[in-house]
Structure formats: C-alpha cells, structure tokens
Image (cartoon, rainbow over all chains, first blue to last red; front, side, top):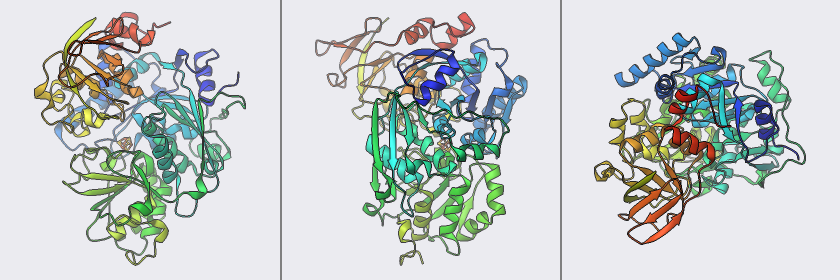
Length: 422
Length: 167
Ligand code: SF4
C-alpha cells in the first residue's frame, strides 16, 4: 500500500512502516518553544526530573511573542528562559531576532524529511519545506526535550489540488483563506493537509509557507508540500546539508481529495471573529478601518514587505489609519532595508516595530481600541486576539492590507488606481 | 474515576484557546490560579464566579481550537472544572488536557443543557444526565491517553519511567 508524505516521514522516524491510525513513538529532529509556551515547558521539564536536553543542537527557544518585554511579569519569564537555555547549552533567540516560524527555517535545521515539534500551533509552517512539523503543548515539549521523542497518532491526509494560475493581485494568502472558508475551522481536525497542483508549485517559498502556516486554521496537524528545485535552492541559502525529497506514492491513500481552480479567485478576506468566515473582497470593500498590520509568521517575509512597498510607494496612508509593520526576522528587516523597502513603507506612514510577532497576539505593539476595525496579514481573527475583545479583525493578503491602509477602508488591490487611493 | 457536578453550557462550536484564556493574560504569569480567574472571560465575564468545584464545561464541536497554549486546559483545571465535554476537540488541546490531567470527554452534548447535573464515569465512558434521567455513551480515549491519565499526566509518567512507556 502506498504512503502519503507524512506516513513516510513518520515511518523513517519510528523505524517501522506506519499507516494512518497507528499510534507510534518517533524520534524528532528539532524541538522548539517560544516565550508563551517555554516557561511552562521548563516547569514541566523540572517536574519530570529532567536533567539534560537530549541534544542541545536540536533544541531551540525563541523570544518573539512579547519581545522586547512589555512588563515585569513577562521579563521574569524571559529571564527564566535565558537561564534555562544557557544552563542546558542550547540556542536561545533573544529579542529582535524574529518570529520562531521564520527563524527555524532560516536556521537550516528544517528541510525535506525532517520531523519537528514546536510548542506553538503554527509550527505546521515547515510543511512548506517538505518536513513534518506540528504544534504541541508545553508538557509534550518538555518530554521531547528530555527524550528526543514524541508520540503520534499517524494522521489521515486530505489532498488539496489547486489547479490553474492565480490572477494578478491574488496571492497564496487568498488561496489558503479560500480553502479554509471552504473546509471550515475544523474541516481537517486530526488530519494532515497535502497541498499540490500547479498553483501551489508556482508559489515562492514564502507563499508556500503562508499556506502551510494556516493549515492549523482548518484544524490540521500539518500542511505538507512536496519539495522541488525551489525548495532545495531556498535551503541552500541556509545550509549545506543534502536533503532527500519525500514524495507521496502514486497509490497513497487519501481520506478526501478537494480540487480548486485558482484562476477564478478574487482577493479574499476573513471577517470577524472566525478564520473560516471568508468572503470575496468585492462583498466587503468600503468597510472602514483604523489599524492595518503587515507582518507575523504568515505574511511578514521579504516578498510580503516587497508587495506592500510596491503598493505604497510614493503614496501616503489615510490619516485615519495606523499602519504597523513587523518584519518576520532580523535578516528580513536588513534585506528590506537594503532594498529600500523599509524606507518606502515608512515614508508612506508605517510604524515599523521589532522583528517578532508584533501586534498579532495582543501582548504589545498595537492593541486596538473598542469598536475599532483592524485589517491584518496574520492568521487569526478571534475575538480578543489582538488584546481587545471589542475590536474586529479582518485577515487578508499584504496587498489588500496595504491598499486598505491607503484608502482608510477595505479596498481591492486589483483596483489600486481607484479614486480613493490616488 | 467518577465525576459529578453541574453543567455550564457553551452552545457555540469552535471555542478557541483565546476565548478560554486570552493571550494578554497568559504571557504574564505562571500562576495558574490567577489565570483561572479569567477563564472564558470573553464569552462570559462572570464565568469564574459561577463555578462550583467539580462542575463541567459542556460545548459543541472543535473545543479548544487555536493556539497550543497549555494555559488553556490548566486555567480550566485551576478553575476547578472537573472535565470538559464536547462533541469534538481540537487536536492540540486534547493532547494538552490529557498531558496535564484534565479529563476530556467526547460525546453528543445536544442532550445536555445549562444547569443539568451530570455524573461522568471516565473508565466506562458513560455520561449520566441525572436531571434528564438519560445516559450518553462517550467515545473511548486511545489507550496511550488512558495510560498517561492513569499515571496522573505526562510529567508523572516521565517521573515514573524517565521516558515514553506506551508500547
Ligand atoms: S506571529 Fe502570531 S501566529 Fe505567528 S507565532 Fe507569533 S503570535 Fe503566533
């Protein structure tokens, strides 16, 4: 019987042929925690009488969620992480380095066939690199730091085939929002997603990471993609390791196959307060906004900033709007400076904040006020997500967010020269 | 393991971890008693004060979706809720609940209303609705999870074996 990508990776890491439904213990190649989850993991580690981490090269922690620290409570937790990582001799990415889901790929330790667990639900992002990576909680993280292992139920896989070519002004973010709107927030719970088809193959690595990142928003354990020349080329910027691509067998078994025509898509927006509350832009243009956010582990990469800059170049955002930009990593920030992107964004009126999660999760960096509407490139729009339960969050692509910041209301990036933005 | 208490019903599906405990609190402290006071706050500002120890949270589909924060099951547990019953759970929440020793019961919750008194037998997977005089069958937990729950959570399991022992 043929295997899916995930069945193959779990087989190679557990030393036996596995199939969906099996419960197995597998070796992990990388274990990651961030500042919202690591403090509890450290407590669990001690509670388990843990002494050493299984391999300091394969453990990392990132301070990105509340970074730099906004208050003493957080400072104490950050200190705990600094002390623990230095004592156990593994790498801690401190303030300003970036979002964990950009830093792990940039570390060169994630690639085809690898198995990564992270105490952050968007760890599924590295499926874009043909790795099986998934989010776990703090106690699971502690167990993995000690043992280098994790138990899994091998998931069934849903295959998403995206045919055709994305039209101009329509991006990976629009495609994944459309898929989530279609299958709903729990449409893939306990399962893995495998994205394929020419629309997916045509995406840049950044675009692929955007799609894999949001697999969790349909409940999926992972968002897998095949590796190709682009994948290997991208990885060669960060590591010399030779990877072997993991492809699904032609007779692999899928629990469901969904097909989409990307060429028919218009820009998409997820409306408050659910990620699967998705609509086409034309149904929602004109909704006033007070804050716009470009960044996060979904859309804070160089390509995203470049797209935003191309929309904003030589223009000014609406005086009614605050635009916050958070580059996903320090490297991206530097590259964006070298390309003049940061200058363009700032001249247009953006406030650029420390590389990291930015205002995504409501800990700092731009909490909206009561009744305000925010349009963001993030992956979640739950009530209270950005720190205020009385604000409304709309999710969209960097192009849509940028053009909306100019217009002061939700606007269509395909009508960039419309009256409102010039 | 028998649990009994009254029901706090949340009718909606997809109750996410931000509703269970908002990010603005969870990043600040490891004091779970403090977090417990804010549990479910965005859905019901007075929720914490309504709970009598041993009560149940009862919900629809996909309970606990969203982030991987273990503070979500811990805050519920520290609010002295004895178990969460839902039609289905998000995967990470389900793992985290078992790992931290909060029982989760997957069953048809349509026949349970706010204020009903329940008796839950985790071992047999039976939910008795004492108010309505009916019995509801729950979906059994996988063996691995029963083993981890019996050991008192994953930390206790590791203290006992120093590694995974679930073969
Ligand atoms: S950017 Fe947002 S979604 Fe991504 S890891 Fe940070 S808080 Fe989570």
